Image 1 (tube, one colour):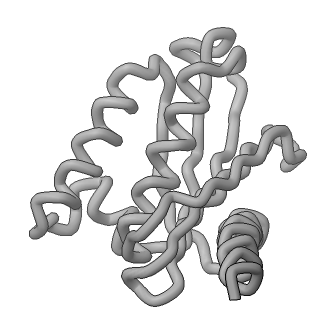
Image 2 (tube, one colour):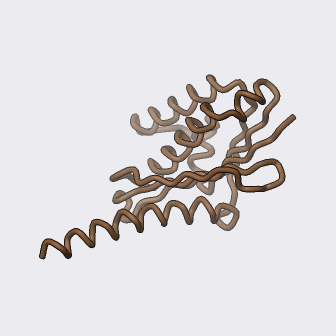
Length: 153
């Protein structure tokens, strides 16, 4: 059985504010095999966390790894948001409709993957690479916006 780790993170500056996601794919030996960072616009921290999981599962669903490891592959999704982990697992109630939509999309993606998926909370220190990707994406976009406003003046 092959195993894959997905570390995801989402964050915003201002909560809500400019937001980004970071995704890191690691093989069963802990080697980094793919990363993704993306500015997602205006969102809360929790919304960004959900968007990160969705993006990771979308990337996974199109991957050669998912195709080669159908039925036997195990994917461990690691997040530093305990609230989001518990809501995805159905242990915490989702009170807001738009958050419920995120959870539904995640469940649909999971159901379409013929893999074993596990979600787990990890301390922020164990999610540094995904967090760094979030901050890089935010810094790139916000610096460009700042540079454009300076050039107009």
